[in-house]
Length: 513
Ligand code: ZN
Image (cartoon, rainbow, N blue to C red; front, top):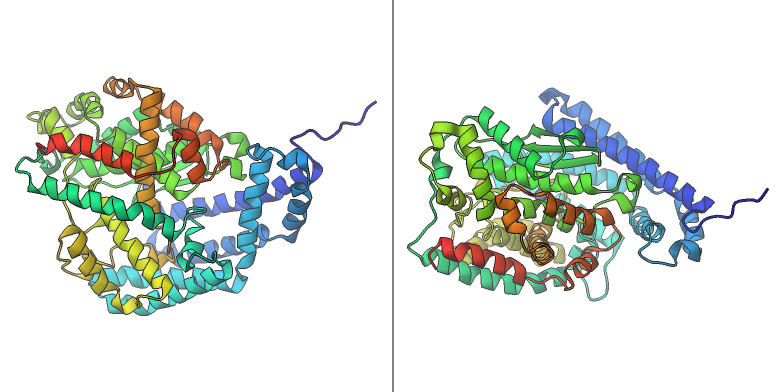
């Protein structure tokens, strides 16, 4: 009888490490489900008990994630060439990423984690009230507290000699992404988008807005968007679609993905865009490999890459003429006489109206990026100490005038509109525009691999794109960092060119240019 020697992919230490990692992850996914319930099903008076449940889960999670045994096992695994010899092998990826997360968790004192959770939860409540009343001064002391705690957090994490505090915070959302990197992409992008926007706004030709002005019953809208999301590839045997104020996707496992959307009688494109967007997030979560769930190899790369998947289905697919060729009979099927007078140009045009406006979440594909740039500049300056919280409204309004030629009427439609800072999330915003950029660059690569992709959309065939995304992006989990994934998939580093090409090719003809 022979004793089995450890295989290349497994040692006792590695197996124990993965068991501990999965244990923490299982608890994290349970917290995600409790959180989903809070946004969709929970009765209003459940909020206090729910916040205690979530705080308890967060505290147990922090305890599990900082277990010193993880550190010992990592030491053992890292010195074993059978595990770490090939950098892109699942074992090496898991060890590298568990180390990164473990070291970050350890840098934060438990007292700071708890203080941040507590202050964010209370600040969130004050923010909602302040927004309703359009009263920045009511929220200001809470935002000052959040900024101070985030500064402490950044100091605990640290940043490189040529970096700055914002970098330390952004690392939680987009590993390896610095303010300087973001600035290098955003500055030329802004100039080109602004010039393009001026051209569009100066044109006397505009796409038809008729489709967006028709009132349609919400019950029918819901059936319609469900049908579309199923058709593009969201698997309802492994997911759900419910309603919430702000649409989101919450993945607890690749076999249980929760999406939400919202409906307005007056604008079915809002529900359709939101549903296709969240379905894109959901298709990513469902595309992670079941055998790796609970480990970094079964986890999405970053928020920017996640956003690239949602934006691709929302914009590159859902705002293409070819999509609307396929979708037009469905619009007739679900809405009948109400849309009888509409043609393809009304549907395709209605999905592609460009109009500078105050609210980020309602912005079109082009001006959306300006909203992000403004927020990035402000949070970067705050973290550097170059801007005081009390001066945010003034800078906000001045920049909206400069970038979008808008006079912000009040703080409700200005600096109080977003939830992020009130939840303690500083460093998050740029991932939205990074998502737009990655999405356009990935889509060009998909088109190169499948030159008839757009014709497939006309026939309602979306499986080719989904399969390509499954194989090239989803199945890798965290094998590559975002920038490396981009180079691997597209052969080039991330640039703004594909997004600008995408916008120009589509919008110039629609605006008669
Ligand atoms: Zn998203």
